[in-house]
Each structure stands twice: as C-alpha cells, then as structure tokens.
Image 1: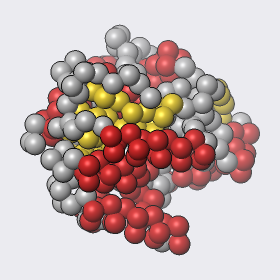
Image 2: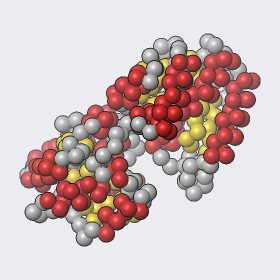
Image 3: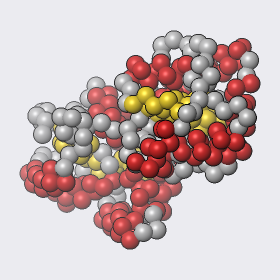
Image 4: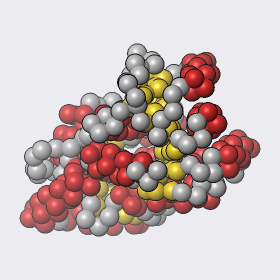
Length: 350
C-alpha cells in the first residue's frame, strides 16, 4: 500500500501494478501519474512480482481482504475509481461505507470479453459482472473502446463513457525505407493469429514476404509457427527495439482472431511511423482508421493478401506521406494527457 495523501479526493484501487507488466498495469500507472497533477490521489495497489509476473492467487485474495477492511475505515472521497471491473466488490463496499462517493470502473478487453464466452466459466463470470452492475447501479463505467462500451451496456451498466487508451511507445523521427518484411508483436498464442498469417496467408502468395516476430510464447503448438523459414523470431523486445522494428517494417500486422478491447499494438506502431494492417473487428477496427492503416477480414486470406500487396506496391513518396500523417495523428490521438483529461471529465460529472 502507498502512503495516503492529506485530504484525497480520488481513491484509485487496482490489482494491476508494476513490476507486473501488461496493458492494464501501464494504464493504471500512467493514468494516475497524469491525474496526480490535478487531483489528490489515495492509491491502493497490488504490485506484481519482481520478475514482472502477475501476483499469485493468494496475494490477490489477501489484497482484496485488506483493501476491503481499509475501505471500511477510510475517510470519504469524492471518487472511488476501480482499475478494472473484476474487482467491483471493493467498489460496492466503498459505496456502502460512503454513499455519496461516486464509484467509477475502468473496463478493458479481458474484463468483459470473457463474459461473452459460451462456456460454463464464461457464463459464470457474466453472472458475476451482472450482479456488480446491479449492485452498483449508480456507478459510472469508463470503456476503452465503443465495442467494450457496448458489452458493458449489455451486461447492465447504464452510465458508460468511452475513453480510448494511449501509448508511451512512439518515435520522434519519421520512418525511413522499409526492410520488405512484415512485423508481428504480441503473445504467441492462437487467438493472436500468427499461424493464420504464416500458414493461410503467406503460403498462398507468389512472393511471400518474411515476417519478423517479437513476443512471449504462450502456446507450444502456436510456437511451431516460429519454425517456418519465413519467420524470424526475435524474442521479447524492449521499447527502443520495438520502435526500430515498427519503423523499418513494410507493415505491422495485427491479425487477431479473437476480439480485442483496444488495439494497443496498432496505436504503438502507427505512432512509430508504421503502416498497420489489422483484423477488421472489435476495438482494432476503431484504432485502425483509414488514416492509420488497412483492415482485413480476420478469416479471409484473400483480403490479407490484397492488403499486403497494396502496401508493398506503394511508391516511396506515397508511403512517406502516409506514415508522416498517421504518425502525427496517432501521437496526438493516443496521449496519456488526453486520457487523463477525459477521465477527469467523468469525475467532474459528480
């Protein structure tokens, strides 16, 4: 737990915090950094493990119990902001203790997408979220995309606002000539679509480009794709290495087969001067607008081939013009300052 400031007006609660590494951890840290410039924050956070892994189940349970007790004795604040929807019971406890506090929840892709799965666990989780929506009927929810906002409303949340995410990864210089390779960054798992690109798309092309791959192996079967002669596996890359790969690629591909709350890789890549080709669904389709890149049906090899060939055929002049424009748009559109201002605007509705 962090030291409590004097007379806080926002209590931010999260189980996603460094040194754990992930999109939600980044969101919570960067958002609170920006908000602390204009608000007095009382942050209750569960740090990850020193090696960057997430906390254990036991640590999560202890954090929940300790935070619940602390909330029972905490002074009232104007806003109690939960970093993700799964910890809604802590918001409910806070509302019981101080009825005038406004409860706000941030919703991410993994928060609500799991509730759409037609499995026993998916239905059980959906029921859990619906109970939270009912008990926190006066709460406000911040969704990171229109698609997540729609899911939240279907699950029972009534006051929903979209605040899209931001990225710290960007390049200050324009991209130069490309290396004639595609670039994929993300988890090596079936839902991210790497094997679809290698086995179903590149295999049909007369002149298939090579594909450089960065990311963590989550699935051994999917990892067999890395053995293809068309694939060069780079392992995990740091921010500077990612920036370089984004900027020098012919195109950054985001071929997710599963739904994405927000296409963070697409936003990062565009901010580094890349041309992005992404699956045309869920939050990805909201990020990859025509001024950022191209969309393709996640199940259509023909559409992916067409998109790749379009980008490969661009002249140097057309590519330079496109990437300079998309880079400027992405850096402006996906800034943490903008996220903090839009989040504070939700607070100000109280």
